[in-house]
Length: 84
Length: 84
Image (cartoon, each protein chain N blue to C red):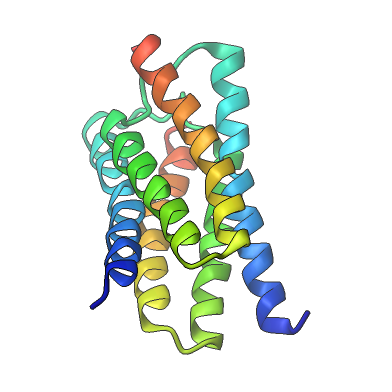
C-alpha cells in the first residue's frame, strides 16, 4: 500500500468510527436534545448515497465504510426521534 | 456528467451540508451537552486527512467538500469545548 492509499484508509477509518462515541453517549444518557435532527436526516441520506456510489463503482472500501457509518448515523437519528 | 458521477456529487453535497443545521442549532442555543467531544475530535482529524488525500490525488471535489466539512466540524468542536 502506498502513502496516498494509507492516508485515504486512515481518513476513512476516522470518519467512520467517529460516530461510535456519539452512539455510546446516547446509549448511556438517553439525551439527544442538543443534537440536530435535520443534520442526521441529511447525513444519513448522503451516506446511503455514498454506499450506492460504492456499489455502482464496485468499490468495497466505500461500501464497507459507508454501511458502517449508515448504521451508526441511523441509530443516532432514531434515538433523536425517540428521546426528542 | 453520467449517473454514477451524479450520485457521488449528491452524496458529497448531502454529507457536507448536513453539518450546517447542527452549527445553526448551536449558534442559536449555545447548548452542546449531548454532543460527543471524542466524535468531533476523531471526525475533524478524519476530514482533515480526507482533504490531504484530495491534495495528494489532485481531486478538487474531495478538497472542496472536505474543506467545507472541516470548517463546520471545527466550529462544532470548538463550541463543544467552549460551552461544555
